[in-house]
Length: 105
Image (cartoon, rainbow, N blue to C red; front, side, top):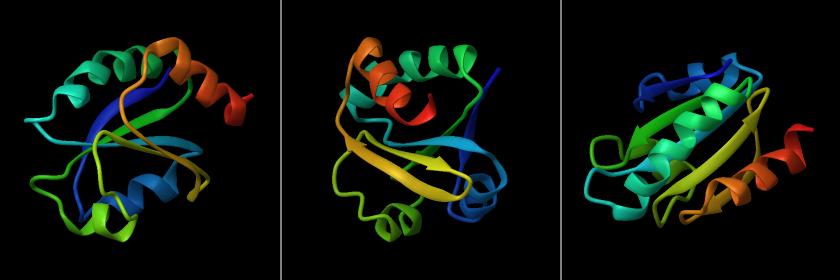
C-alpha cells in the first residue's frame, strides 16, 4: 500500500506535491515520543495508500521553520500538495487512525 521514506529540505516540496496523501513526520533521534510513534507510522503505511515522509529536524531546519513546527513529533497531513491538518505530540494507533479517517474517508 503506502511507504515510509526519509525526506530532507531539498526534496520536501517534490514529495508533498507529487503524491495524493502524504503524512509528514517531523522527528529527531533523541525524541522519545518520536521513537514511540515510529512503529505506528510504519503500520499505517502498510495499511493505507499513504506516503509517510520522515524529516529529521536535527539535520533539516528549513522545512520545520517554514511550517511553524515548534514541538516534535509533529505530523502534517498533506492532500494533493496542501496541508489538511497538523498535530503535535504522540498518539496511540487507534487515535491516529481516527484522526486520519476524518480526512481520508
